[in-house]
Length: 264
Image (cartoon, rainbow, N blue to C red):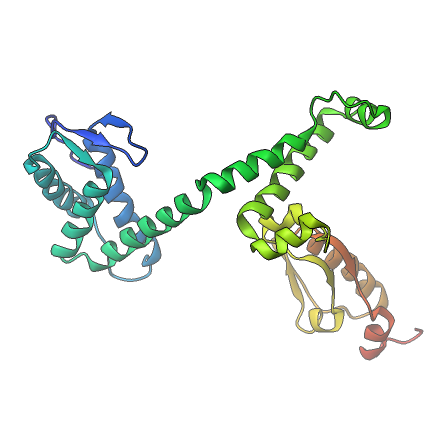
């Protein structure tokens, strides 16, 4: 979409949420409106509902006109967003209004969650344990830290940050508290933000029933013991790429017998 941004825009100072004052930039307002239309177009790309730059420019012009009418030289970012929502609604772009409003609400929830001072302090305090530098008198611990390769140090950073992120932002306080107090121990916590499960028991009989896909390949049902075992290896390898932890096939021989293979 091509957005028409006037050369002369409102002479205003925008007050951001943190109180910082910045010069008004019409292009940023136009891009915010464009994103709202773009989200609807992506969601409804198979339908006849389509918008173009005319729709974006129409809303943008009306929002800009309202901003220019504000008597104060300062305007809060929330006021501008309110104008955008109101103009979307007033001009019949209900679906775009809902998409824009939903995104705005999610951003507000995100700010409330991640910029809470207590949680920030807890998160940063946890990062102090990274141990890149040490003054410890424990020679074994000191030697282990000093002998780490660059990749090992990077993995340590990633694991520590991910684990502390899970404790601070993703887990209920009673669970994270119980873990930190030593009442329970939560394994593989650093993988929690990844959204993956831990460990998997693969049901080959169900997996082989109609064949299965692996990346850009489709693997048909096995017809003999050799192909059965070969496909089992592929299944384990493919699943390992999707999650961490152990992979297991708990009834390998029983599943083969159930398919009627001989010499088992």
